[in-house]
Length: 244
Image 1 (tube, rainbow, N blue to C red):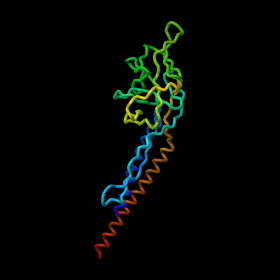
Image 2 (image 1 turned 60 degrees about the vertical axis):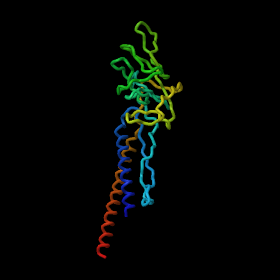
Image 3 (image 1 turned 135 degrees about the horizontal axis):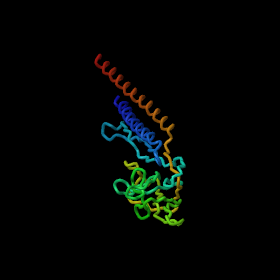
C-alpha cells in the first residue's frame, strides 16, 4: 500500500515544482532578454534494505531555453540586441562577470554605462565611462562612439565585451544572470554582432506556459485522488482484519 502512497507523493511534489517554474516563466513574459527556465524530473531508486521497490522523483538539471526571443524596434540609440548567438557582459552584484541578453542601457550618475537594473556594463577593458551629456552611437561590433561638440568627428569611448560560450557552459544564477559553470570569465568573441535601436523580448510563450500550468494542476489533482484512494483501501483492509 505504501508503494502507491510513495509514488503519488513524489509525483505531487514534482508537479508543485513544475507549477512554480511555469509561473516564474509566465511572470517574466515581458522581461527583456529573459530565457525561460526548464524543469524535468528523473526516477531514482530509494536506498535501503526495505526500500528496494521504492522510487523517488528528483529534479534533473536541464538549464534554460536558449531559443532567441522576438526582436522589437525601439529607435533608442542606447538599446541593443544581440544578433543570433552571443551575450553582453555585465558586472554582477557580487562583482563577478555575468552575461545577459537585455541590452537596454543607461548612463549612471557616476557616468558609467549600466543596464536598466543598475549593473555596470563591461567592455574589453572593464567598465565603460561615458562623457557628460554624451549622445552615444553603438556599432554592430559593440564599438561605442560619441560625437564631438566642435564638429562631425566621432570619438571612440569603448567597446562592449561580447561573448559566445557554449550553452552547456552557462548556468543561470539566482540573480537572473548567466554565469560560466567554471566561474572564469568567458573570452570575448569578435564574431558576435549586435543591432542598435532594438531589444530582444522574452522567449516565453504565454500560451504554452498557461497550458502547462493547467496540465500540471490537473495531474496534481489526480495524484491527490490516488492518495485518497490509498487511504480508503488501507481503512478497508484494517476493517477486514479487525472483523476477522
